[in-house]
Length: 337
Image (cartoon, rainbow, N blue to C red; front, side, top):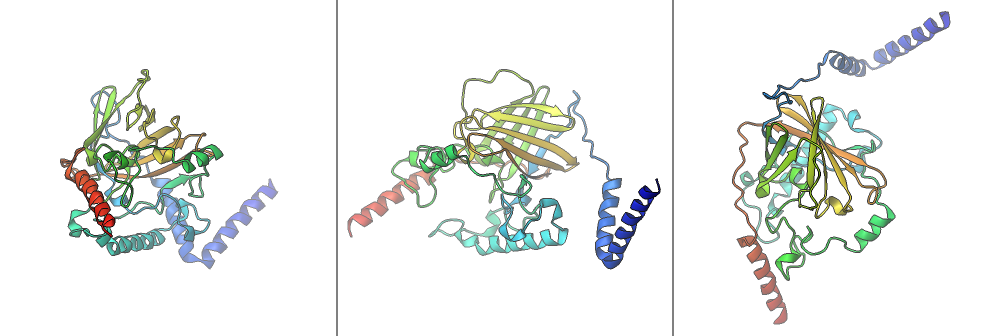
């Protein structure tokens, strides 16, 4: 017993000495401990049928600019070790880069237009990077089969490739986003330069999520009903409540995210943490593509004024016609040389 008390006394003495040597560090540590001890978990309101109520208008506009993986200059730190002041410096640098690159948004010749057209400036950012698992903040390596699939260009025409400078022999050479069909999933949840509003609507046994950009809606049954033998662009989803967290598992993607295999499984979690905040995360499970599962996330903020605007874009729109006609004009000009 006496040895135990001696051990406790030694630990207390060491902590006191450390705080005396660095009062600021001690204050920060004691402040964090106090907040952790007194913080109460948020309990969301309930719908009339008893489910946690997460309905309303949400946005991830303030998550613009957060890199998916941990930047290389942050050493061995994990997300929880990034202090507020360090995150503030990272955010300032990101916003400065966004402002400096503004002129390139609209393309090489057309320019960006006024910055008030876009939503991604002066983002607040809730974290230093998005990947939380593995703890090193890096997406796990590809499997040998996935490396071979990627090297072989495994997507096919129209599956989501293309982009500025890419082929434009046909509309099928352009991405589904260029063609105003879909951003896919989880692309539709990713912060963009505009169109970052989302609407969550609940009814008994179902949740619907509407996306401002590309005007898509995901219908998520809250049951274990059989999945249809179909591969829509947004996948097939089934949800459930785990406490106050909405868990959504999705499969059957037509054009899987990041060139994943057709058997990829994506598990989302919508965890309400405050009246106006949801912690959203996505776990990617695909042993045919990555050596282990990985998870990334961001924060959704409720904004009653962030209504969904009409996204007046459709396949065959002027942009597609102009992309193809410009490619033909470039070819004609090259042929005259």
